[in-house]
Length: 305
Figure 1 (tube, rainbow, N blue to C red):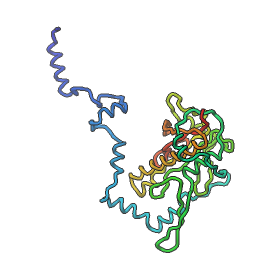
Figure 2 (cartoon, helix red, strand yellow):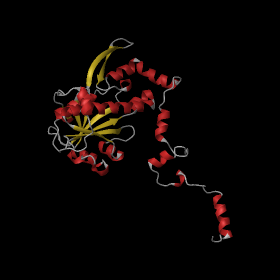
Figure 3 (spheres, rainbow, N blue to C red):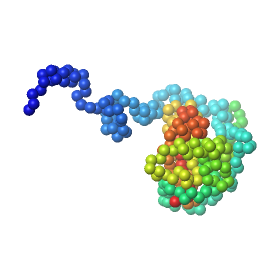
């Protein structure tokens, strides 16, 4: 065994006095999600997902939450909720939707048949089919009058999916890429008026399509007929429910997406959820700030290839 230089041995011992005995996550510059998972016991690193779970817990003794919720039962907020999403848009930007189609298969069959479809033929999809999908996902399905404490009534509108407190913080947008009745562009669904409102042109749609970063091209973006975008405005829910309101935003996105998938399956269309988009680019394409309003989810639509 080779003799160790005494000075080198002394220096090594000195270094060991302040150097980590063995590598841990702090010594790694590039940390994968798997590495973070394998080091869950390490408390020195941010844990935003778990922080959200803890921050959005409900506690029966939370007086701030109780007072915030109680504000929504007075006449002022009750009246505000009765006119939520009622809007007027420039006539030139409004697109009337065709009458909804009858879905040709039963719900139990649609549930059994539903599969994620990522390859498309490139054939166009009609506005009648897309409009029916949108209505079944976020359209008005009923109304009821509620009595106000000061007298009179306010009319409430109910939609195809549940929403925490009836606040509806999720908007449905449509990027029409190959829809014969629509110029290529981006549109927002206005549920009370039951119309599409044009919000962007072909350049907007191109920027939106370019914001996807799908690994291996597993989704045929270029041959999809449309992309549905779910835009969240979380403070519409969080103003009442605080951080827990973000849970309701995610619940609503799931309900909207599932209704769309099942309706599309009934028409023989192919759809798939997609989260492989660069948030900053996608939000920028739609003119969203990315925090107070942001794209929370997207769904590709086309004829199965």
